[in-house]
Length: 194
Image (tube, rainbow, N blue to C red):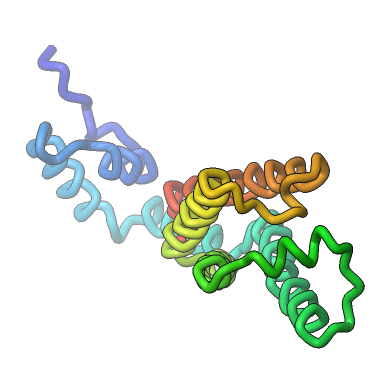
């Protein structure tokens, strides 16, 4: 036995999985053999059924994508309302919170806009089942983490984050964002996102 799998016995679906999994630089003969078998079988009934199932699966938007989209897109809308109310004096703030907001710099606002934009674009791309969603959501998570580290180093955390409830909310938000990024990566790996 030479250790080479008997690809001729594989189903069309298994051949597709094998093709994705084979490292072409290490096993060029195996990759070429699987590619040849896929090409030979592409018009068979088995292949057409597998391709149809894959296309149907892509068209169905997972329920969790709906939930993530609603949850994530509500954030910017609430922020816009809050900012509008704050700048036009319609929001009664505690002195600590007002002092905290007054300490925010142009960099803080720019980074917040960047994170919000990346999250919004990433969420829209996730809803559209586009693979670029992963990179936008990951980028937002990285920049947001950078913002928190920078605030910690500069001791410029907003008052809302220095309270125990604020810290819990920030940690919870980070865990949710990380879970969304991991979910987007999982969908990308399963080829649900294209």
